[in-house]
Length: 432
Image (cartoon, rainbow, N blue to C red; front, top):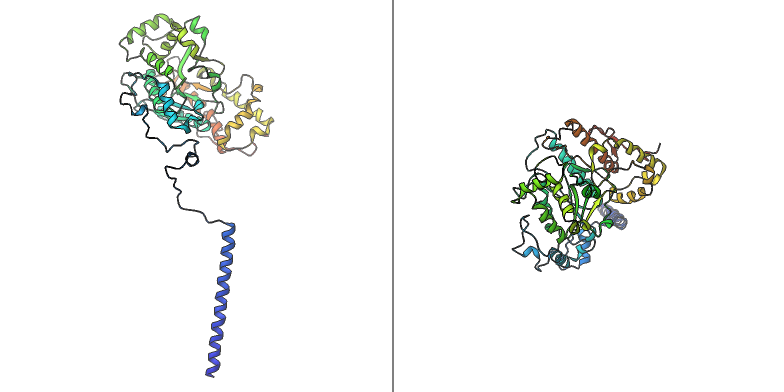
């Protein structure tokens, strides 16, 4: 009996061994197949040694430029005499910028089209109860536009010179931005109360290749009528070059930093009969330079009047509804225009739309709507406007622009006057 029990024990042990061996083999086979079809992810971070070649750094940066390299070679930044102050002129800026790009070659490619948008507001909270909210949304609008078109944004809410306030405050900021961004060909100043209302439109930079400053203006009003409203300096595009440095210096010296500030106000008031206030202002100053020194400045300044480089809000807020309907009609006819797509490829769809825009006639979206005279922060709007008209108009323009962005995320404002309304966009919208 003892012998029989012994054989039974070893027999069971052998069976157990075979069972576990088979189970282990099955597990190995399953794991092998799983590993083959599902590669093991690498959770370890990848480090690139500083001495890696430019190509690796370009890929790593993800922006087409090497953001991690700043060679030790001396540049204008190492010059203790170089100043960002509006009162200290910069010399040989073209040479200095060229030298910086030489030491940062990945920025040189595409530099001709690189733009930095600059805007800003006051250092303190707004007096108008809805002012801070409107400024936030106005800034969001600019960020949305630049996200689609690849321009950088700098928002400033400080006075970089204590005397340069109000409309003069932009000049110290613009000069500082030129020095801070030698990689950018253009600095684009946009007033805080101006917003993009055509989020697809892209600046025709090729048109400005022989010019250094672009503003909305009309030569006949400058030279035939010497009107204070012959251009608007609240939105301008300025090339990052020595000519522009010199212009900003001369332009600024008609402002509060000048000992002749009051005198400049008197000169402007006597020259522009439609000027409404006695102080020297930036707009009158630029018109004065164009009028008095035409040979020096006119050929370098492009007075843009072919589209709304900046449009007067009173003329534009009434067109948004009809414009929206015209664009929807266009999309109902062309399936390609209503196709859902990633926001990153929005410029491609803007190019598709361009060939059909002729059908809209006058109902093209205005590029920039400028709420000049509304003063959303202080609330001290021009007395010829009703305050509620200003604020409601601003909200309508913001929602009109926002719908062009929200559509990429699957939603729309159903009422342009009510920012809280939002509806989901159905598939193949607006196809009936």
